[in-house]
Amino acid sequence: MTEPTETSPQATEADEYRRLEREWQNTVGKDLLDVPWQQEGASHVFERQFQRIADGLDLDAPGTILEIGCGKGHLLEWLQKAVGPSGPKLVGIDVSEAVAGAAERGLLGLRADGEFLPLRDESVRTIIYDGALHHLIDYEAGLRDAYRALQPGGSFVLFEPVSSPFSRLVHHVLDPIVFKKVEYESPIDQHYKDYFAEDRVLETLKKLGMSLSFRRTDFLAYPLTGCYAGSAFGRSSRLMRFLLGFESAVEKVPPLRWLAEVVSWRFLIIATKA
Image 1 (cartoon, rainbow, N blue to C red):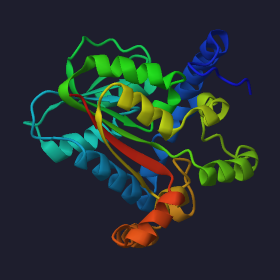
Image 2 (cartoon, helix red, strand yellow):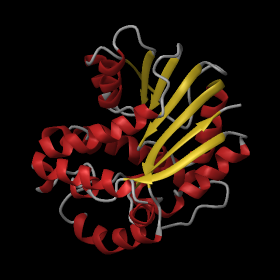
Image 3 (cartoon, one colour):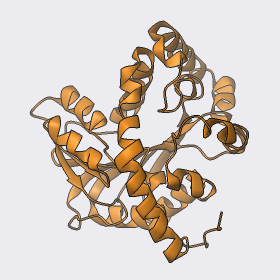
């Protein structure tokens, strides 16, 4: 892999991988979006993740909640059911054809690139990235542009994959095996895996002057779902409910919580604009 520069990957390479990403999302990726919801156990895990995101939102305040990388609108539909018709305006943006699924769910979905947002300055109250930020090659520039569109007092809610010594080791060992059987990571996922890291995300947000909260989550049940690709474990509702209960118990014990965070697979950042 060609190493990216300190600021951003080389332009010609990046443009080619943006093209490959759109092509993959329009073929493979859009079908993978439905896989977790086709397995009863996996759906419990993803609903728990949705709840974590919802806990970081002010669902009673007026304004627009925008999800960048909304896919077919699964999260937005879940939020819409939670807040009802009198809740905030929910809008999704996605680079792929999958965004048509948002309209089928009665939601407003726009086809656009998360790195180049078609938004007015200070027009959005909340911006969500649910596993979408790491699909932006120049994600730091993407965050700065999203910040431009965020209203004062508004927030980012970012729920993204962890980049840690543990996760990198697991990927190094398993990816050559897994990718022979199933393609569950996109071209940008694979090519720029070492470029995306939560410390860079945090540094970018701090430079923007945002107040932050940060935590790692999902150390057990989520990876056993197959991380969006499906698994035999994900079929079992009883098993996944047990694992989610075990995770919740561990989170209440500080020494165990610290250990769990070392082997966690997702991180959650809530960042508020001054």
